Image 1 (cartoon, rainbow, N blue to C red):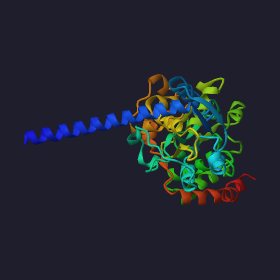
Image 2: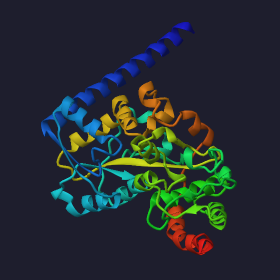
Image 3: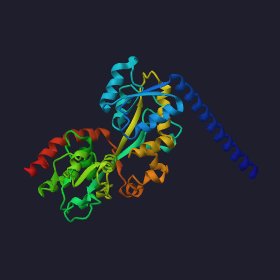
Image 4: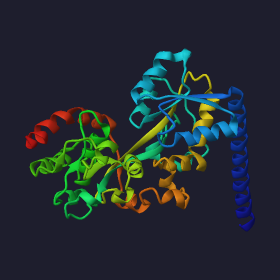
Length: 358
């Protein structure tokens, strides 16, 4: 029996070793092919977003890839891939989570699974490798502690009901962040993407109390003292806080009673002129170094959900992991339902919420 067990263990060890060697060989082949291509052209991946600059600098230093980016929206990226086809000027793009499946449906992507594929949660990736979220955004509060009018710092959606401060969410008809803020509130109060009413009720109550701010929570409105409590993506809140004259006046936190999370995925152009460089870029983005680069830009790397440990000097600038665990933010489970709900949201917002401010 022991001999059989030993043989089985040895067989498993050899299989794992062979698999690791094959992956290593494949990676070296990919690196060599990418070096031969010598360039990588991206869209929607500018230096100052999620610290993409760190990734481009590393890829140039390690593999000699010359990089160029053209910034544009997710919808524009997919449209560009589709319009240019064989005349492709872009190899890779970074798009919001909803646009990964859209790009696949349009047939403009090619798959690549990085070697860290198993460390990406199932909810955050396409089974065939066409898309995978590299970093997430969770709806958070950014609180100016000096402008709470005697109230405590709110740590939950429920707390917002009883404060003396104004809550600023922005324009739900134009800003995805604002629409997701309403959804996050709904989720905290047992709603979901098919039932956003609980979130609308909260903001209706704030409007009745004349405690709903009408500005967008941006760095400019915050600097002017026009945002007391803002509803923002966590990475935006952290970036805003870091740029303030007195960052210690602010706290960015995940509401403890629930939130929504989404993220961004790379899409590799089916018609890419530098396909191997694009695949190597995705490989690097999901490596420890690539994930840490994203964290330096205040984005929460996806592998933080599966145990990636960030260096302390970087982790201390992010929201503590315990807050995410406690809030258990939910991904959008029914994209079609959310698309329908979000299209109807501006009218409902005007009819139920804005009307109370007049």
